[in-house]
Amino acid sequence: MHRSENEDTYYCPVCKKFLEFKCPHRDCDVRASCKELALHYRQRHQGTNISYGTMLQVTLNVTNNQMVLVDEFKEKLYLIQNYRVNNNDHVNPGYLVFLTFHGPKTRPGINYELYASSGDSRVGLVSDTMTSAVQGTFLLIPKDFVSPNHEVNLEVFLQAP
Image 1: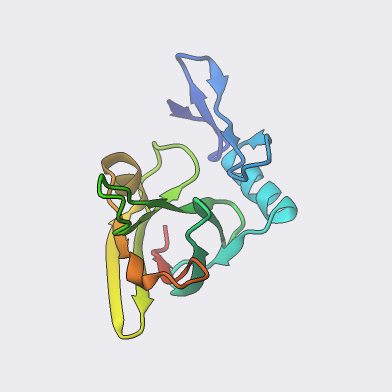
Image 2: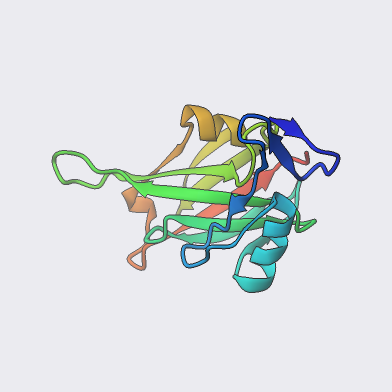
């Protein structure tokens, strides 16, 4: 995969096509480059703005599989993804949560910190978007951290690229 002159566009020599990415909104079929997709998402859907180098506090509803973050330059999308942990005893020990970059996996990962809190308790993860996507690094949020409204308080920090 090669970058074109436009840093946002990737060309696959095998497919002989420029790569486009699908909008992460579940009811949208738009496909575009990373930068165009971030602009589309910001204009058409509700995303949460995040600034690099600043801790962002958000409330994640665990009944949704993801939350979309739009970077401060409105050029990149990041996804906080969460999955309920199921085991054979039908006991829900909690949720697996991680952050990924919505775009080509050839870009270097962005370092991030992700914390969940409940009362005086706090759990956290320090990773990067590439490791989370490829190796499956995640934060296990205990079910006790989730409110009766299915919400958990998160803090997210993205290091500047």
